[in-house]
Every structure is written in structure tokens, then in C-alpha cells.
Length: 269
Image (cartoon, rainbow, N blue to C red; front, side):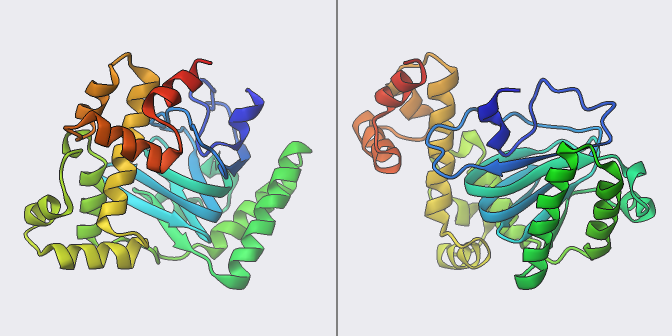
């Protein structure tokens, strides 16, 4: 695995985890200006993501999960998921076989991703526990890892962090490519509520207003098209909801510091 990939928030798409009992990787996307395309994943293991800093938006089977510092997300084996957005995410990712822990019965009841928030002392302790698991993994000390996983799952309770259905719905809609040109008013109209109400509840539960999430989704889509297609910039603008190429270029430069053409050139430079 290339060294640079070690710090990104997803599993290597070419890796074979079928015979793996446990693995863990550090994650650090601070300062990542040009993240590569994020593939959809489905592991034969129970996946986990723990954030110490930053935020991450994950979609799985039609529901979105917004993780920030102190949040742990457990993903059942063979359940597909995608990372829609991440920002300055620092923490750990990995996976383990359910047979490796004594909480198999608890895990057998998990049919969808389970999100848990750990605050203050608990969060600090969990960060240190993951640090020790990284060291033990490097030393192939599975005895400690088994005990650490049991301790981790002992701390997991019923989901304490779950976005209201309308917020989860909005985030899913905002990151759907066909909705790139929709405004906050359009989304509120589709939801059958006022724009002020939807914007207020989205900001309350995610920390960002609707417009910021729409911009993140459009920017992410634009970067993906610039990376993975040969579409002219004017067509990339249209695909991401911009009728005017010059406005699209100003939008892109505002958020990245460079123009779309410079971004594409830098990928192949």
C-alpha cells in the first residue's frame, strides 16, 4: 500500500480482507487539498471509524451519519457504505471479525451502522485505546487487541447520536448528483416545510447551514468530474448545477484557491 494512502479515511479498494481477523490504520486528512475519489466499500468484517478531530459524512443504505470529534461508527460486515464528505478528519479506521470478541451476541443484533458519541474523559480514553491498538497491531500482539476490542464494545451503548429523519433526508438529497442545481428553497419545498425551519434544524444537528452542505456537495462532485472525466470545464459546471462557467470558476476558486483548470492540471502535473 502506498504510504500516502495510509492517512486517508477509507479502506484500500484492492486489499483482500477475507482472511483478516483485525486491522487498524491512522487517519489524518488535515490539509488534504486534492483527495482522491472515495470508493464505496463493503467489508467482510465489522468496520469502525473513530474521529478525534474534524468531521465526516457517511452514507449507508439510504441513511446518512455525520461523525465529529468523539464519535465512533460501527459498520456491520458486508453492509455497503460510502464516505460523502470529510474535513480535517483525524482518528482511526479499521475492522475486526465478530468472532474475535466476546460480545458476539451484541454484535449480531447490529443490522445497520451504529453511532456512539464519547465525550470528555471517555473520548480521551478511547483515543488512547486506539493508539495502543495501532501499536499492538504493528507488534502483532493479538492478545492485547482482543482485550481492547472487548473493552471498546463494553463501552458501546444504544445509539446516542442519530440525525433526525428530515436532516438525514436533506443530506442524502444534497449529495445526489441529479440534485446539484437545487437551492435550499427547492429542498424545503420537496420536504414540505419552510426554508427557515429546515435550515435551522440542519444547522442545529450538523453545525452547518443548508447552503454550506449544498456547496460541499457541488464542490465534491466538481472535483470528481475534473479528476475522472475529460469533460470540458463548461460541462463540469453544468453537471454540478452552474449555468455560468465564469461563476462556477469563481465558486471553485473561492473554496480551493485555484481554478478548475488549474486543479485538473495539477492532478496530471
